[in-house]
Every structure is written in C-alpha cells, then in structure tokens.
Length: 180
Image 1 (cartoon, rainbow, N blue to C red):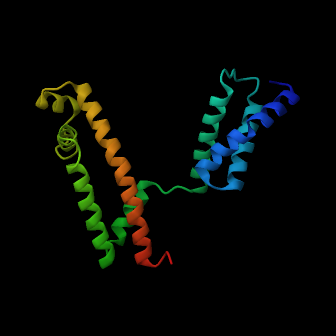
Image 2 (cartoon, one colour; image 1 turned 90 degrees about the horizontal axis):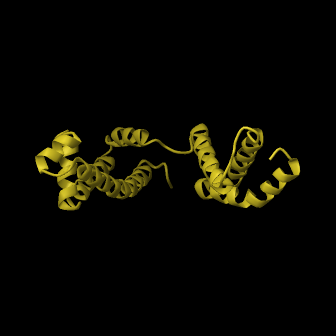
Image 3 (cartoon, rainbow, N blue to C red; image 1 turned 180 degrees about the vertical axis):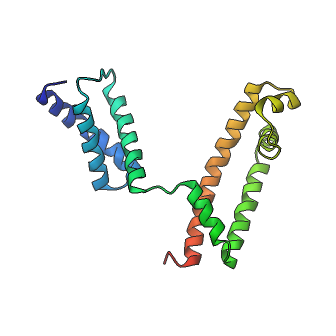
C-alpha cells in the first residue's frame, strides 16, 4: 500500500463507510470529517508497518477508536460519575429530591422485576457483597451459571437504567432552568 494512487483508490472506496460510521456515533458533520481524515492519515502513516487482512473491519475499529479519542478530547460524553455527582448535588431542591427518590424507587423496581434467579444472584453479589464462588456454593449452582446470570441481570439493568438516568437528568435540567 505504499503507492499513492492505490491509497487514493482505497480512500475513495471507503470514505463513505468511515464517514457514516463516525457520523452515526457523533451526529456532527465537521467532527465526523475530522475523524475520517485522522483514520486515513493513520492508515497512510502505518502502511508499511501494518499487515491488514480485512480492511473494512480495520477501518471500522479505527473509526470507533478515533471517535472515542475525540469524545474524550472534546469531552463530548459525560462520565456516569459526573452524572451521579450532579444528582447528588441537585438533591437540595425539592423537585430534585422528588426526582432522586423516584429514580431510586424505579431502580429498586427494576431489580425486583428481574427473573428470580438473576434477582437473587444480583442481591447476593451487590447487597451482601458475596463473591461468585460463595454465591455458587450457597445456591448450589456452578460459578459459570452465577457469572452468566449476573451478566444478564447487569445487561438488563444497564439498558433500563441508562434510559431512566437520561430521562432523570433531562428532568433535573428542566427543573433547574438549564433547559427552556
């Protein structure tokens, strides 16, 4: 891939794919174009060092990594720890306290709606701080089953709770007057 005309052909062929991948993640034309430029620049710089067997997969991963790097640099994302801290600080207002209590209650309900075995394993792990082997021994199941069930529970909770958290933050911002 040391030939400039071959590189130009690859650039032309894969530009749309890389751009669409970046834009899907960023939702910003200019930033997406920056990502495309960086991905192809890095590909050109590493052309003699890298042996790429699947270029579309390589470009997909390079784009994803470049988007993450840009998000960290631009601080486009908000770490969950900052969101939790904002919720804690916002609890001073009556409206925020109500939202916070509703968030906690909904979280408890989400746990209660897990399938029985997942709920029991989740509670043993996070309420009683038992390790995987201790849970397996107590429930007379394999450690692998504990890990699988815990993974499924966390996946369900993460999906539901992420949506709930976004909605709560939106409501807090409305309450505080940050959103009109």
